[in-house]
Length: 367
Image (cartoon, rainbow, N blue to C red; front, side):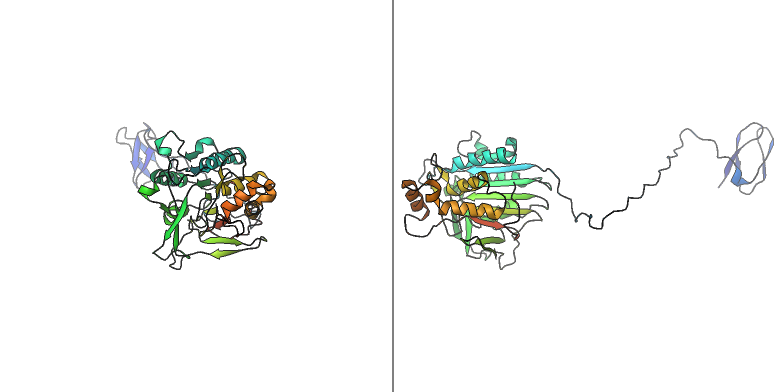
C-alpha cells in the first residue's frame, strides 16, 4: 500500500513507497523528509470519494423490570381492531318454503351491531331479497363471496360476525368426519337449483384460515344448525345450567379448528331439531325465535358471559308464558316449538359451539 504525502516545496501529492524516510519531488526536485508514517496526515480529500459517517452504536435496551412482561410468540393483538360482519336473512318469498321473520332478523342484528357494539355500517354486508344490488341477493355464490370477504386480510384484534337467518337442513355424511353421520347445511335463496352450503365448506371458508388474535362470532338461526360451523367442541348444558364440553373432533383426525384464531357460535337448535319462525315472541312482527332471544338477552343485561346469554335464551323459549303473560300467544309459540304438540318437550334448544373449550360463566362476551 502506498501512502500519499505533499511535497514540502510545491505541495504536489507524492506516492510514498512503504518504509521510505525521504522522497524527491519529480517536478521541483525538492526533497521531503518523512517522519514516522503513523504520524502522517491523511491524503487530500477527493470531492467524489465516499466516506460514510460513522454510525453510533445502538443504545443497550433497558433491563426488563419484571420477568413476566414478555409477550407471547406471534404478533400481539391490537387494542382496537376492525369490525366486520356478514348478515344474511332469507325469506324465500313466493315459494313453498317462505319464512316471515328472517329479513327482520337481519335488520335487528344490524341495529344491534351498529348501536350496541360500534360496528361501522360500511363494514356490514347485508344479504337479503330486499337489497337492490344483485350481488347482495342471498344466493349461494353471493353468500360464498361474502364469507371469503369476511375473513380476507384480517389482522390480530379484528372482530368478525356472521349472522344467518333462514332454512337449514342436513344430509348424509360419507367421509366419516361427523359424529352423528350427518352434514349440516344452510339453504341459500337458490338452493333448489344450486344446492345447499355444507358445513365442511363453511368451516373451510371462515374457520380454518382464521389467524391468531382474530375473533369470529357466528349467530345461526336455522334448523339443524347446532354444529353448522363444524367446530370441534359443543357445550352440552342442562336445564339447571350445568354443562360439559362434548368433543366433536372427527375420528379421522381431520382438523376442524382455526389457524390460531377464536371462533364461537350460537345456533338456534341442536342438529336434530328445528327452529321456529314466529310472531309470538315480539308481538309486533315475525322473527326467528333464536335471533329474538339472543338480542333480548343482551338488551336485558344478560350478555356478560357466554353462559349467561345461553341460559337467558333457553329460559326465554322455555318460559314464554311467563315472559309474555300467557294466553293464546303462549299456546301458539308452544305449538310452533313442539311441532304441533302442546304436551311434548320443546324441540328447540339454542346451542353453543367453539374451537376450544372454556369456562362459559367466566369468559366475558363482547363483539
